[in-house]
Length: 122
Length: 107
Image (tube, rainbow over all chains, first blue to last red; front, side, top):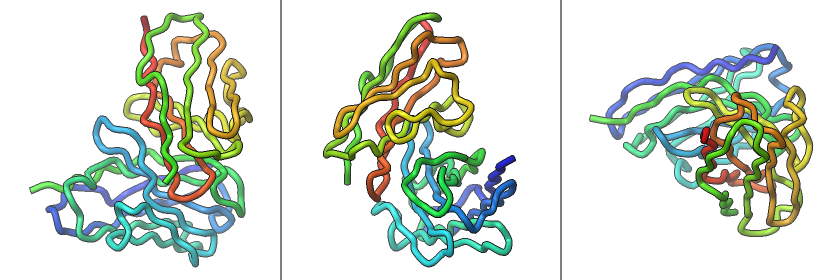
């Protein structure tokens, strides 16, 4: 069955960096666009980034552009989010998610991980 | 960016009730609209994609309709496990945007 497991969250000071990972299993990882989506405590969902199947095309929310970088390693079935210059407003649970349809994006987020909490605070 | 507005923000209903949640897009998104259910402490779950298609494994009491700018999610007969927060999301273009959520509570 499809599994997505995030890791790497934690407490970091504003201005600091953190790298999140998402380990995928149960499907052909290289066939699917992947995303990061976050949810601040008690708030709604905010899409963060998309990455294409081969990792050559990335799309970002304006709120993280220039600070966050999404990458993937298809040989390791893993998705990453490098977060630099973290701000208090980046505090959230970060989910990785798989698109519903292989080879396409913007098809709906069919599978989600359990999330990992990032807290940017002094 | 395409703004997504859900109504109501919260809703109280009883088991067995029929409920409808609406979602309005700031511009036409054809049928590129998805619905998710989220329970406390859990990841969201895809219920409906492309405005009206039921995701595999989702009970048939959930249905979606609409196109263009106006969409709705209907639960035909509320079950205890349906009390949760529901989000719409446009997949017409990036940046992907979500509605603010509708919290469905037990009356």
